[in-house]
Image (cartoon, rainbow, N blue to C red; front, side):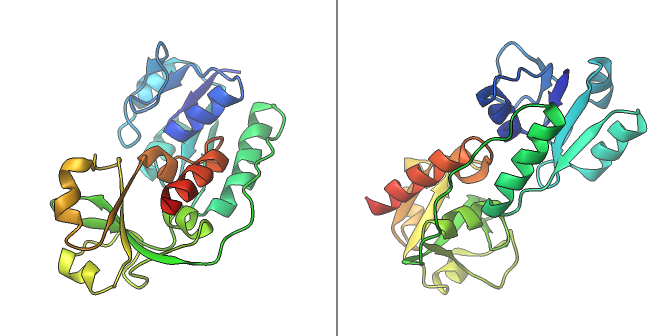
Length: 222
């Protein structure tokens, strides 16, 4: 089957299953495979020219207008919807069924009770944070982190003073979409102690999810 993946985490999951796509985005970790643009700006004509049997998208990662454009060209498009860690198992099962490969068994383990409060910073200048109702927040909640603030939407734009008012115990700073790193520590620690995480563990769902949960839990315990 000829597959085009417009989702980096799907591309990673396909590799774990031994499925080699014919097209991927420039953000996918897949050397030697044709790149067809980005997650927000795929080259629809180039995708169509690859003659895929299946194009895989994600409702959070990709745009509706690109989905519509691909469908208008008669392409078979599978749009997955992962907004919570509990969506991973059924949505990867949908993907496996569409590919005709065995359904994976993802052992996520039981959720842990909340033991710490954290703000999750995802952008700088302007500051933007992760809120409830998102995959990343649900992943953290699974390992005992209450993501705050709770009432400002999924991706709130807030000042550092506003997030201080939420009284977090920690600031979680992932390496994507903004490349937070050690050079930002002093600025972020004006809010609370900082935990730097691999952004792929926080935002890439699929085959990575079980090991990502384990790595994040271990990082929190240090």
